[in-house]
Amino acid sequence: MHDLKWSEREKKIARRVFEAALHQELGEVMAEFKEKAARAEEPDDMWAVEGWLAQRRRDIDTRYDFRYSQLVIVFGRLLREGRITEQQLEGLGEDKLSYIGRIATL
Amino acid sequence: MHDLKWSEREKKIARRVFEAALHQELGEVMAEFKEKAARAEEPDDMWAVEGWLAQRRRDIDTRYDFRYSQLVIVFGRLLREGRITEQQLEGLGEDKLSYIGRIATL
Image (cartoon, rainbow over all chains, first blue to last red; front, side, top):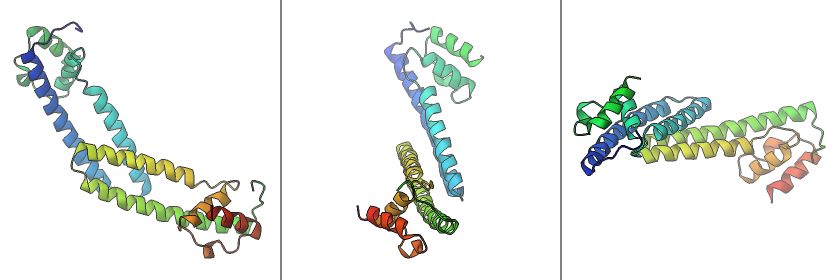
């Protein structure tokens, strides 16, 4: 899986799908962050937002790893989470799609 | 300085002054937090708020240390910062006030 070769065309598709999913997820976190901040009434609510945000950042940093050695795992998870679709991945080689599909069903 | 004895009356005064300053400062942080969150436009703004908030929490944790061995230092700093007044400290013994006053002018 780590030895998959990505063509230039595949790299472009991968980058586009990756960035779109990340952008979407960051937008959701932003919206939730603003809502939580606006709702905070006590200092403890504020520290809870800080902890939640740090957790979300670590989670996103872990899940969005654009190394070609990690990308089929990344896309497999995103597919399982419903954050990307199989249609978006069209154009990737069967070797990648096969791994991605298997990881998505884990 | 660490051997100062605090009477029950002094402890009550200290607790009241301490809590009032902490409450005030937390309120300021809350207001600034909500303003920063509302103004955030990009994910980077959001992560900057997270970093700022973590820093404020550590700073407050360090500065508001209600151990009797630390209290004259705490009050000295708060006095220097203008967060408490000499009037609020009335009723504390001269031994404490002397230390607090010296630390306030450092």
